[in-house]
Length: 415
Image (cartoon, rainbow, N blue to C red; front, side):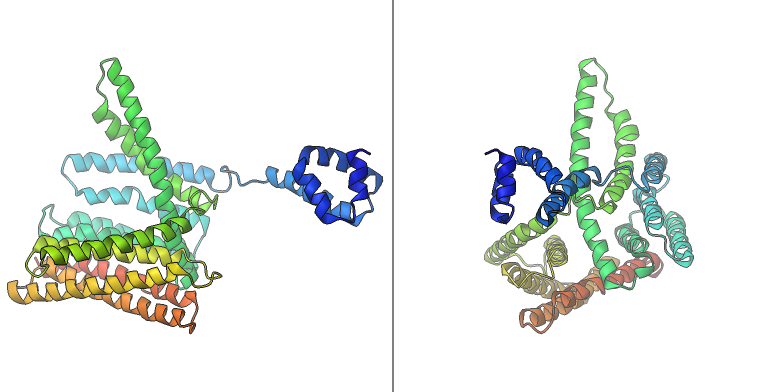
């Protein structure tokens, strides 16, 4: 008896049909078509027909890179590359600050967001005005390295990042779900851009080595005209790829969060024990206090990363308790840092750096307390994961407002 007869013989046995298909899909499909021609009215064979042919149809409908916005993305990538190269020319001439390079990329990413999800005109005009005002203001500042000016260089990218978030969220900028999507976008964007950048660096190294074999040193030319252009253009391409939802980085980020969080927790615990053992004092050692604040920011980023990658449908697991431990650890670090900053302010006086660090630590402390209280309620089954995510997303504008305050007022206050 041939396979066709076996299909018909086992038509009432779903398990056997599935076993036959798994064992030899090609032979099954060939013989199934014969059975289908003989019994097109069979409901069982009808289900199998849709299953087999759906797969063939699905394969022809895979997401394509050349979909809506591809040409516009290509144009923006070219403009970003050219703009960045022009700005870099003036940076080389020491006519403007290097931070201006951000304006060669961020406004073009915002333009793609506007194209991809057109918001109200009032939002577009407001953001465009803020980008222009920020650029003009930045280049009106003296090109010096005073503390207040350096703080502008450090805080302006944060302010621009928040503006970019408004461009991404569009009309839904007040919705927590859209803000959460923006954070996830940044994570996936970072992973994807890093992967492509590494590939680009390998290509650059290979290219320069090949030219060195014929006695030509093209390092300076290649960096200024190819690498710089490519890095800026790649930022737009990465934005397009992540927005296309091709799952290039989406599938790996939850695993990175689950692996990275416990490693960070263990590393920091060992580090803090070591610090206590060797007697390092952030109250007296300025450099160590800076490192301490860097650790705090790192823990906050890892915690937010882990929270945003958590699945609301999952039950509580070990990762949630690790996240809670990270938050407690971050609060301990922040408490020590705050005490050290207050001590240095009272002992050595007010400076722009000390005021800025104090403000950041107070903001982070308030955010961590909010997240921790939300986590406690979540672990006690009094609320869902969305409460914790709200504690992250609703606080984002506060960081943007602080960054704007430092950027636009510190050069005046501490002139």
